[in-house]
Each structure stands twice: as structure tokens, then as C-alpha cells.
Image (cartoon, rainbow, N blue to C red; front, side, top):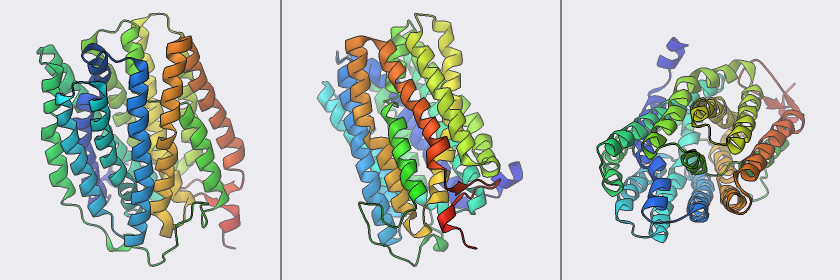
Length: 405
């Protein structure tokens, strides 16, 4: 596998390095936002749900917009550079937020940047490698992304241990953000990534196979139970985990995801995407059930969150690789736009629902509903989505109706 990883195109490696630096900045503040809202801005779970829901929903809409335009213009670099630049500017400004609406505005700007870059970046990544290496490429990208997610919380923990104020810690995100912009400027688009066929955009997903449309519906169901990860950190704090250990707990998640993303995603190239996704969603369901029922056993949080890292490693790369397997090459940017729209737009109702259930009926019901959505989505993926798709031992899974004799 090492030889295959080293042989990946330079575009894949450069995109991975950009994500590593960007996530170092993003994850430096990510586990601190719930603490900042609760201890400084005096905001509760409902405010957290509003902030994260609106920010992520806006990001998702822009991911469709940027994906469609990437297909129409056959250009991805401007969207990638612009998106990373906007996020790098918004994050340090959170240090000056005096109320939760100001935090909402800055998180909104941060997620707008993500919305502009994500779908063009995913399309560029998928088109830069052979179809039989898509799992490996996305796995490596997720591994480097999660490496940044390890560095960020570790830096946050160090700065907290030095008694640095939360506002000052937010300012440190400017350094890796600037490096990410510089690296993004060095990206070169491969010539074969520009399709010759132009297909008009359609809100009815005209031009996409039925299996892809069913896949989006099941992803929507799963996402309805997949609210902001900040609720997980808030739950850990509620169960008695000290504030200084909260970033370490999130660093554990990212470390496990970093170590296993590449081998598990590469495994989907041989065993099929479906098996990896099903396994990951099952782990997710069990994780949420146990976390919701945990009565205060803080030691249990560490193996539980390690399991959550395995869920991320098994699904993040495989889910994105499956998009490229099912979508036409000429609509690759649009396909990732729909994928990101589906997985992000429903984060608004998911976060609002989760926050409302938690505050109104307690964490057990909120986490139980999320687990139920995940397990039901796994069943539908197995018996409905892939019903007319012929599984193979390679990465390519082709709808029966589209296979050539």
C-alpha cells in the first residue's frame, strides 16, 4: 500500500497538505467554541444548535452552487483558493465576538468559505486519480485532514494549560490559515479534469442514475440523526470531563481517524464501498446509544470517542468515493454539490431537533433518536440503495441499467 500511496499524483498530496493546515486552524478552535459559548457568552444548547445549524446549512447550499459552476467553467482552483482564504480571515475574528449572534456571523463566514471550496476540491481529487484508486486518494486526503484535526486540539490543550484566555487562543488560528492559503495557490489543475461534455443543471437530478438519487435520500436520513459534533463535546463536559481534557478527547477522535482513514478507504477499493459505510454507520449508532445512556462514567468516554474515530475513518472516504462511482464524469462537480448539500443542509434541522430534544426531554432521547436514524439508514443502504448495482471487488460499482454489454 505504501508504494501506491507514494505514487498518487501531486495534486492529491497538495490538496491533503492544504487540508492539514486548514484543519489545524479550524480544530484549534472547534472544541473551544462550546466552552466559549457556555462560559463566556452564557449561551446554552439551543444557541449552539442555531449557530451550527445555520452555518452548516448555508455552507451546504454553496457547495451545490460551487460544484455546478465548477462543472460549467471546468475550473476548480479559484473556488478552492477563495474558500480557504475566507475561512482563514473569519476564524481569528471570533476572538472579538461579544455575544452569540456575533459568533453566528463569523461561523457563517467560515462555513461560506467551506461551501465555496468543498465540492470543486472533491471533484478535482476524484478526477485526478484512476477510478480504482478513488478510495485510497480520498482516504489519504481524510488522513491528512484528520492529522490537522489532531494538531489543532493539542495546540488548544497546550494553550489552555498555559492559562491563555480563549479569545487569545482564537487569534492563533491565523498562522496555519495563512499557510493553507499559500499552499492552495500552488495547486495545478490536471488537463484531463476538464470534461468536454456540458450537461445543463437540473433540480430534478436529470442525468443521474437512480442509485445515486436513492443514495442521496438515505444520506439525508442518516444526516437527520447526525447533528453537530459539538453536542458530543458538550455531552462529555456535562458528564464531568474537565475543560482542559475536552480538546484532548477530540484529538483522540482525529488521531484514530487519521491512522485508519487511508487503510480503510483503500479497503473499499477492493471490498466495495457499501461494506465500509454499513460498518461505520453501525458503529455510529452504538456510540450514540451508549453516550446518551452513560450516567457519568467519564473513563468510558475515551474508548467511546475512539470508536467514533473508527466511524469517521470507515465512512468519510468511502462515502465520497461512492459518489464518483455512481455519478457521470461530466457531472462530477454537481454530484459532489448534491452530496454535500444533502449531508449539510439537513444539519440545520438535525441540530435544532437534537438541541430541542436534549433541553426538553434529556440527552437519552436525543442520542437515541440519532442512533435510530443511523441504523435505519444502514438497512436502507443495504437493501434499497444498491439493489440494482452490481458489487465488484474493485472500486467501480456500476448501475445495472448503465452497464455496457
